Image (cartoon, rainbow, N blue to C red; front, side, top):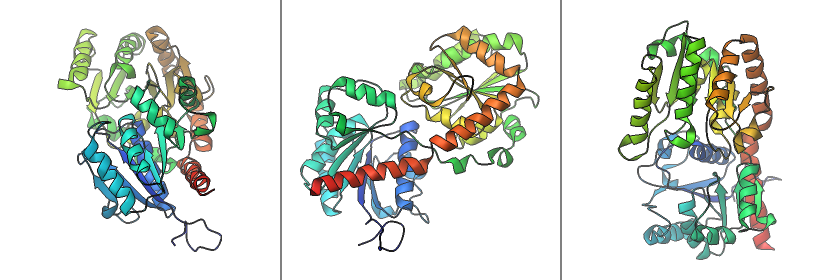
Length: 392
């Protein structure tokens, strides 16, 4: 039997794991899954993944590359919705054929499909991760009550699951999201701010403020733009970046933001740059990173910006309050308060020393608390505990 990290000796045996995600876009939950899969593969586990054929995760998982996920270990399925019987049967067969021990689902619509696959394979255990704070349907609540373990990516998410009364306290574990700090180490030396500014037609001497996330009202791009209009009054050389894709029908969210930019007379100062593959380039170019979300279960973009040493202003969502210590590793403002958001940005733009102090403290805090290595190890511990519990 293969063992994790080399010779068997005292090493634990490698696990057979199936990760399931029907995601069609890249967000915080999808980055979590990519980092988890890579970490488990690096630790010697036999990891399989079930995705949609059009999934952007396929390209992120280093499929077929050295030390990446073997092509044979990726299965594409329709994964249309919670009642996709064809996909459920295919998952059941996949689990049986590969003697999967752990089936791990990451999106609510995949929970029932994963539960069916496990119910027909008594040797497997169902683990689900809750990445968001949104309420679940009755079908999903039933599925969660049958999961061996529910992993919450933050204390806020765990509190929500407990509040729903759908699982016992023993079923719920918190594994804080982690980020691969290696992608951000010495990033400023690898990525030139000047090149980024030149690439987007921005002045070399500008002050740059940015926001990252899917273009949706919940991410607060409208509040960001309204705050930008106020910031411009005090810092005429300020410019603004909005990075993120739009999955709404007809790109209506982007169209709304484009109209608002014109109304606020910010056409020359704002760049809507879509999805940026290497976000670290943006983080290193920014003077201030902003998260204006109405709700965040964790806030992966916040931790990435912090890991880059960039000063952060964030609305006090559930997730942000777990990551940022206000005035120590960033600034927190009330959700939806445009005036407070603008004032915090202005404060940092006017105080270079404070920006540097907060950025350095944030970088140290992320390295200490939010590493991918810690996230992978804690998840692996949960897998092993559930397998041992089944055997008892």
